[in-house]
Image (cartoon, rainbow, N blue to C red; front, side, top):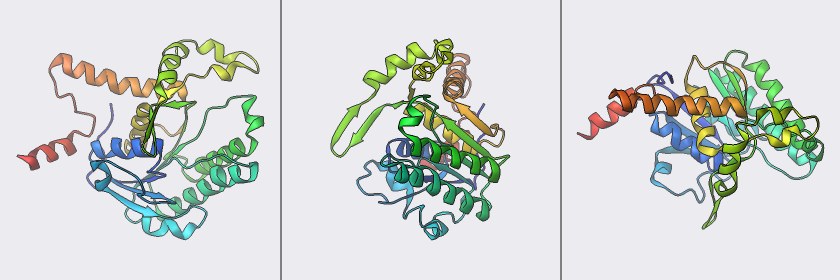
Length: 268
């Protein structure tokens, strides 16, 4: 069960205007959490009424001072920052930028830090050396600075409908069927060399749900959550909702109920 966050909870989403980050922002807002976001472009091109409820900051994690204002009053952080390019660039974006954020958050007294990392794809690691080395360096820093409140999520291919300018790309057309098949084929993942290529995709909504829960639920265990763990935690949330509906109990208890209640009460 997801323990509802306290009223003073404030979440900072690094990269909140991106594909994964925007879903995390929306998920947190639905749970009544105060949400801020820091990215290089700020709110640029972010559509939807939910965006009006986010505190947008513009800055770069490669410039640590950019984090000072954004971290004001923040109790938890979720980083979705990452990118591709040359090995040097990939290490800088996936490693150095996140390490700067982790250190700044620890110095600020932030309680929990969730890092969206990536699944190990074996052979692919050598092709994207800077990407994975940067991720590993950030993971090591997080476990060192947040031994009791640091959570690393390692999804594989994240699918869903991705907005690129005015165009919507339905990644779920490929990702959803593969997720359904491969999540039940875990033994294939252990095949030497090619096994990691059978890592199941995961829906962006599932990643967002687990990330927000990990950032706001004080009983969520610290450490590494692989793609199977992400699927399991997201299914637990769905199962809880289904059982609540069948039993006729409150379906939103355990999903930020006090915040929904205050919202509904305010609207009366």
